[in-house]
Image (cartoon, rainbow, N blue to C red):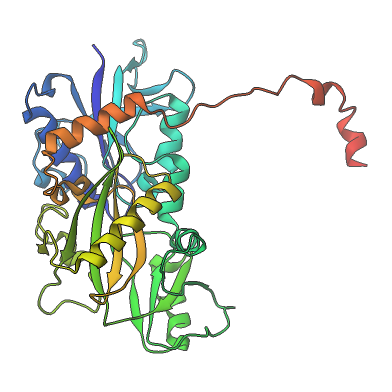
Length: 373
């Protein structure tokens, strides 16, 4: 009988939070009405990129030392008709997992930037969440910010920061962010441009790229959830609350230190904001969902002074799958999970085709050596 997989973990700074989200999802699927526990596979992606099947009923502490006891090693074959399987021994053949759909709960890194999504596409595994292109756009702060600005949405100035970048035409203080990443990991607030450039060699999270924008202490965070199945739906607006003694931004500790992923963070939900501001946020969320090709459940993050707002970023695989945001309208977690899996089955991500590659170019190519002359 085809089975459902929950995929979590991965070689990412957000590995631990991904484990929490994956375990929550597995528990939600197993304990919901008509629970699918008997047909549920929990697939754990290690910090070093290895794959294991684990007991979906495990608690978070089982992953403190890495791979839990009793885990079964898996391999992922991206050839057509491939997928996850248990490696065979000297005589036995590999036993493939018969997966109907996979619920992707990987935050950050290759689990959210399109790498995992591309592998699942190649293997022919149906999965929840963003497509390859949607994941890549959401993870690239420079590209996403450019798309939002080009669409006429309100944004802060954002530019690529490198050792060769000229001083910007906006004054400090500045906020320096990893170009590829999430959850406020690696973000620095600095007073001047020289310090911003110096952070490029001192902050390991910036080694693959960085962006610079003005730091606005007058702005606070607002967030809206988006889900796309069975139709586009927006959540209540949330105002995350920074803890006492927190940093200048809503940081990783504010979001996840409670131990439940984003579900355990302090918040005002629904946020008490002016109706005109809420209407603007919702209109922008619908436009971003279209521009970014949102699929599954995403969270759109804004900054606001209480009257106006700017678009900050999109999280295409949000912590706890943003289950905490669905209070108005109310969406039970098991319904959220079921809809994600149904979308994975009914709304394919991509179908590769070799149409047009009929050999005409090869027949008329002549010798390769001649083309190099």
